[in-house]
Length: 320
Ligand SMILES: Nc1ncnc2c1ncn2[C@@H]1O[C@H](COP(=O)(O)OP(=O)(O)OP(=O)(O)O)[C@@H](O)[C@H]1O
Ligand SMILES: [Mg+2]
Image (cartoon, rainbow, N blue to C red):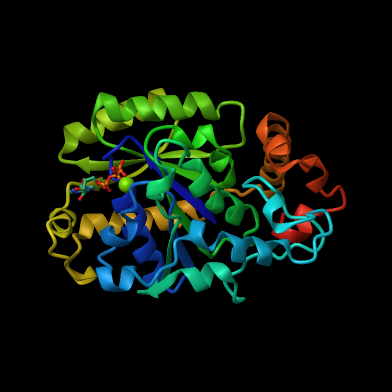
């Protein structure tokens, strides 16, 4: 189950992605949490010590190994460098699973039952000339080749606002959780997400965060309902989260019961949302054609539309 955490800057995407990953990992679910935000903060929010964090390999720096693995023996990809973020899997491609060793697990660290991975940030050389999508595009590519099941959690902490729609990343998820604080500004990002997602197979849910009282909750319920998006659950303003942000990471046993209840509600509901990998595969092909025509054919000097394999069976590869 692929789950994106999006929302306004500062709403709590990273915090909730990290806590939710911990929660799933503790339940014994195979879980990976990936940081796809230029502000690489997920591992820190998870309370992972800096020395341990440094043992991850940023996925963008590991791109060649990842692409070589994913390409496998796919004859439609002439060279590893011809793989772009939207290149879809085809006959001969190798898919990622939790059960098999692959370059994602090499780059990630395993802590508290969760594989933690990060896309990487902009290299100093690239400042002013490169867009961050060139970095987190590796996450887009990985997700396009991930064969996960309903009982496995693939969690991605995303960039703020509706930025995911500027790349194809928005179309890689079974469910997109929009983290909303009880404020107009936060809800305006949900409104924007609803508008952009309208013509695409994007399943949205809202998760309230930093909810202080019944009035906050009433406000959130009314506002999300008005936008036609279910408020799945809400997380209170939590001392354990505040303390962690001040450098005092409390053990999971000290997490507030309301926080734990919200995480369990998220686990039960997010993991039972209907999946449609075939529709997502079709969208991926559509976006690949669009990228090929707009810029990628010119930049690689090839006709990348031919990477789409008409014989590839997404049902066999990803399940129904
Ligand atoms: N439920 C909560 N209770 C208390 N503090 C919280 C809660 N959720 C988040 N915070 C605090 O709010 C701040 C912003 O949270 P976080 O970094 O997770 O937001 P974000 O949406 O990922 O931000 P960015 O857009 O910068 O990536 C942090 O200091 C975090 O500790
Ligand atoms: Mg964040």
